[in-house]
Structures are given as C-alpha cells and as structure tokens.
Image 1 (cartoon, rainbow, N blue to C red):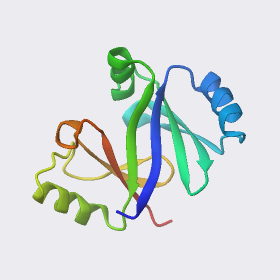
Image 2 (image 1 turned 90 degrees about the horizontal axis):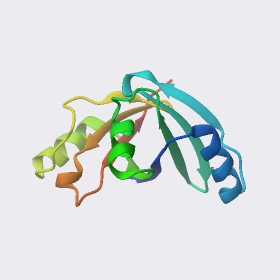
Image 3 (image 1 turned 135 degrees about the vertical axis):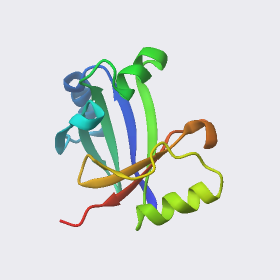
Image 4 (image 1 turned 60 degrees about the vertical axis):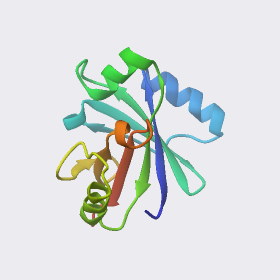
Length: 134
C-alpha cells in the first residue's frame, strides 16, 4: 500500500456537511459525484496529500444508509492507494483477510475499489483504491 488515499465519512446531509467541512478545512470541496451502484453521492475535499470523502445515501438500503441507521454519522472507512488492486486483494486474502467482493468495482473519483471486512481488519472497514487509467 502506498499511502492513505482518503478517509470516508458517512453523512446525512451532503450540502450541510460540505458547508461544515469547508469551514473546518478552510477549503471548498472540489468534486461531487454520484456512485449509483453503491447508492451514494460523494463529495471530496483535498487535505494536503490526502482526501476526505463525504458519503450521503441515495438509497435507504445502501451500505451508507444502514451504517448511519446503526452507528450515526462519522468515519466509515479508511482507503489506501495501491498500484495493483488485484494483486493486493490476493495478498490480503492469502493473509486471511475477508474481502467483501471477489473483483474490484468502479468507485468514485476515477478509482477501482475493493473493501476488506472490518471483522478481519480490527473493526475498520478498509478500502483499496487503484487509479483507473484514463
């Protein structure tokens, strides 16, 4: 893994959270994007070399909606940049980590993504991110 790519934060109201984080971070978000397959709208803030991703559910059955119903707003996941997501997925599976999917999916911000189940990662939902060549 190369670096922390972003921290994902589940929010109820993306517009209100954008305003809050703009004040907190003293910068505006640079992108809002829908990820229909995951049932979320996302918003990204650049913080030094890293990013903050705000996630608002667009579907009441989405993972973000279920997370907020269970735990409330807050940190949802930590994402790590990887050079080759499939190699990293295999390495982690071989090490005994539980992956939530067998293949990476297209995520927000022009990335391929895969998730490691929190039960196998010390209670933290881990996201692997690989840039998609444009």
